[in-house]
Length: 345
Image (cartoon, rainbow, N blue to C red):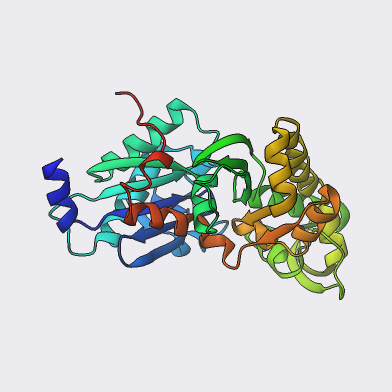
């Protein structure tokens, strides 16, 4: 205990929101120091890292055979242990800056539906990457803290965190998750849906990065007051030549409809398992939307009109989870009860 307290005085403890699409790092007492896409570019010959984050993402779909571009996390969990470890080591090194003589304590945010095996993989990756001590916290709890919800009180708080690989929905009371649902549907599925739709309807093949830009520019879940259009460049499926077509927000909304319905259905199923007293609290307070997917235009309105509940999108939904992680990291003894139990050795 004494050694941990002494180390804590000299190390830069960090919190990591290890996401499928983006990884964010918070340094104790400072704030968010890294916000990068969860992509790594590696040389096939030397097996060494060429780029991490935004630089690696720019290589997606444009890399030669000698370079592998890897997204080491799939559906919210580690898919490539070795590459995740390399990415974490790089992030910890950058977050620590020059104070490297004492290993940091690391808090990692994980999906609520994570298995014991997946917990161990996250913990072992962080330890191998240079962490002194590793704590885990579930995404919905971190999102609720980041949204300033009174989770310690005996009342229901419903948080819906829409990430790149998963959508986490949880009802929280007395600092614990009472009911939760974790579905492997998120921003990545939306991007794939746009690629598939344009290939079938417009005979144009676009890459995932182009699909993401379309989603962010004109994607919506509910009819817009002023519908939008944009030009999209891709490859003609019939001729094989590069072409440009114009697509509308109505078309993209149709492409995203199935994915949005899956998210809403998950909310409905959650209520089937919810005690009446908690449901009554949520009917009064509504649903809190966080995560990058919460920025989809009209999603709050679509959800509100479907489940007939108030829906609130947090002002900075993308960083809400890490904000909660930072709060815990800065006051770890006060919030120890919200941490996931340690994985057995």
